[in-house]
Structure formats: C-alpha cells, structure tokens
Image (tube, rainbow, N blue to C red):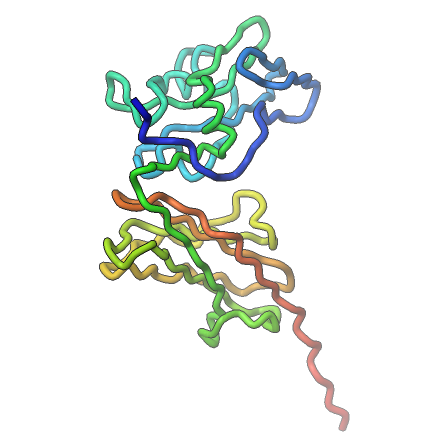
Amino acid sequence: MMRKWRSGTGLIISLGLILAMGGVTTLALGSGSVARANEAMKVTICHRDANSNQPYGPKPIEVSINSVGDITDGNGHGTHTGPIFPATGADGKWGDIIPPFTYGDKSYPGMNWTAEGQDIYEDGCAIVNDEKANVAVITTVFNATTNAAWAGTEQAGASAYDTSRVVAPSAMPVPTGTVTYTFYTNDECAGDGSSAGTKTLTATGTVPISDTKSPLAKGSYAFKATYSGDTKYNSKVSDCEPFTVTEAPPPSKTNV
C-alpha cells in the first residue's frame, strides 16, 4: 500500500554529528557507520513534536549526547521511542530520528535510522502530507514609524516589523493556524535568530504583523515567517527577508 506521507523539502543538512571543539575524530555517517568523540560531543536529531502539523518541529535540534537515552541513565531523547510519523507506538506517539554514534566503550545504534528516516533527516526534519495542499508564505518588512514598506534608506534608530501572507491555491478553505516570526541580526537568516512573535491567523486568513524591533543600529537584518499548517494545508517557511539600516548623519553645526 502506498504511504500517504513523504519527506518534504526543507533545510538540507549533512548527515552526521555536530561536534564541539577539542579532540574529536569523526567518521562519515551512513546506515552502518558511527562516530567517536569526547564528552563535549553533540548530535543533531529530529525531535518529535506534539504538533502533528509539524511532527518533528520547524527544524532539527542539537542536543548533548548525555540527553540521549541508553548512554547514561536511560532517560532523554533515546526514550522517545515509536515509529516514524505518521505511525504511532503503543503510547500514541511517534519516535525521534537519531543517527547512530559511539561514546567511549558504549554504542548508540540510532533510532528510526532507516532509509526513510535518513531521508527525513536530510530534508531538515520536514514532512509533507501528500493529501494536504501547499501554500506560499510571502513577507514584506515595514517601517514602524511610517507604516510604509521598508525603503532601505532608514537610518540608525529606526523601527521595523514584518508582515506576511499565507497564499493558498484556492480561496476556500481559508488557511488557519499560526505564523511564527523570527528576527535576525544578519541578512542571511543565519543562526537561531530571536522571536518576533507567534500570531494566529484571523477568520479570513489574515496574518497579524510581527512584534516591532527597535531601535535598530546601522547594519543588516532579516525576518523569516513560519506557517504552522492546519488540517488542509502543509506547513511552510518563507524566504529570508533581508533589510538594512544606514548610519545616521552627524548633527549639523551652526556657526555664530
């Protein structure tokens, strides 16, 4: 029987472990290979989320190996057992996707590290429901002082907020759910960024604006919007929306 779920497009991340600095030797990870590391080692995993619209969250997470079960006290992510979403285990939950690794004389075999699990892992832990429709998320940065679209000539001390639209392929049904805005102090949406608010779509599908960020110093910034998805539409992350703030001119001098 054909599965109704498949891995979707998302952030492409390399298979393997994200390691802390200092005395670490790694081997390329595949279905049967592992990595050895010191106590500072960390691993990137697909962590199960309570939201079935984003069963592994909006992105992968990096955790210490000490938080993975079967390595220390049997607690942690290693106990988040269950099959790959949408299937669920005896507790009604699905399991984490964790790559295999070794730690000292102990080995962790990985969890849900099948071909399907690795495919989801490579796709940034994103899963798309083939029975749902896809949407586009379009963002525009605004000047909070003028409430006009960002012009690029704004000077240090300016304020900004982001706007977004969830564009469905048809007028009905109206998208529901939330949009989470993220603010970045660079123009590439690099790193985790900081929250600019999570907003609930209105009954007409309109998305409220983000929180205002101010005052902004000279430099490069960006916003990104993540739509949660609902029972009819898949989740979606917008493109990065960069903008810049210029340096304020020096105060003019008056000669008497």
